[in-house]
Image 1 (cartoon, rainbow, N blue to C red):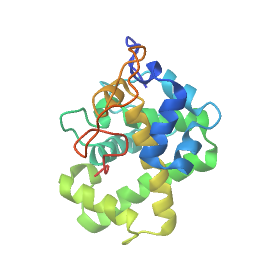
Image 2 (cartoon, rainbow, N blue to C red):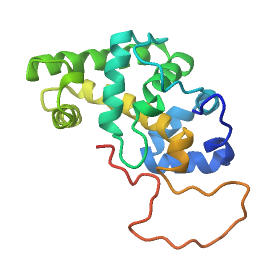
Image 3 (tube, rainbow, N blue to C red):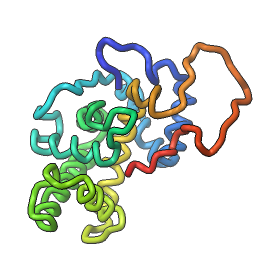
Length: 207
């Protein structure tokens, strides 16, 4: 996922290395599902549009994309690197679903967004986007612990969350700022010191 005027980022990585790193971040089964077929090629060809707000997606409605942007920021909040929505991870997920996944998976992602919206109104009496960040985080954690949610909800959310993380780390900022990054070409060093404070794939808990 790169901006139209940008060329670097993950495109400069060897694809095999990228898939290995993605596997560390998301697990082998999840990573394999995301890059299967033309998944990786489509992801790398995506042109991010982070400045666009309130757009209608290929799969998601305008309201669903607005909600998804807030979910992205809860999973990947802004720190010293951009947040998920600032890198258009919501647009990426919509694009990737449209081009690489069947209608069943597209519907499941729409369904879990509708479930999040409905549960937010039921539990907190307001829309998810208007909740304080702590309550947004608590609601998403409830999905993963199936507290007030079903196992199907958890499975649907896990897939959508993986798409968001996939989009983040195929962006230039995700590949070069959030993670350790060594430009290729740029030489090879077989042994690189590493300690527990070093950045690495899979080091984020995603809230």
